[in-house]
Image 1 (cartoon, rainbow, N blue to C red):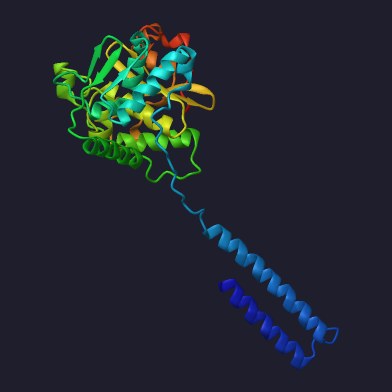
Image 2 (tube, rainbow, N blue to C red):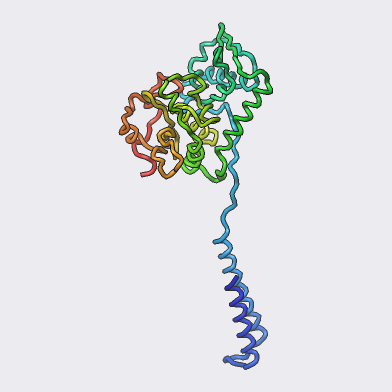
Length: 319
């Protein structure tokens, strides 16, 4: 704005001088005045527009997330049969609707599905009566043992969970994708964690206290809790992610730019993102930590070696 005022004033003085004194090789005609005024106006308009562009930042638009409990890692389709996928979907639907049981044609199809539930639908442990066992299988029928006393209470547990999940995307712009998105979620999530050292030392693990549910809702739990919850958050945001483990430890595999890397929220358990060393790192660093690739398995099924299904990059994403 200062440039505009100075140039306009200078133009006015010049015009006044030329008109009154008649200086210049040619007389100052009305056409000349109009031409000079037009050129000055254009120059001022262009500079004002450039200044406005430099000072104005792109508006923030919160990234919208729609929670999909049927979303599983793409890689799991390489070993899950269509029947097993159908069983998983049926299980999720029944639990969400507070149904008392599911009748299967063949309960043996639940085989790989149990691991899928622990990794991808750990919300089930939010309404899970551990004292009498959360599930009861009789013949080909699976019975749910809910801790809640009504569907209204059950639905409230689901709503509370979904509100908590969505809170981890606060401050994430709709334009963020890939590595930027994964790191932003990692920072938001890690700031809530509180490792349960008492549980780790006692090894008194249960389905619930070692689940992604307790990490999501309370920030508590151990490595398996932290990894499952982070993988879930990534998948809901459209980033391929699942878990792997080696003796006494579990962490996340994520896919960035069509390449696989590791992320370990447990070993980055800190409130200061500048100290994060285990986000999007490679196999060399993991092996330097003492873990062997041949001992790494996919957490949904302990019989599946990680290396049989994915090739994790040797080098870290951030060189």
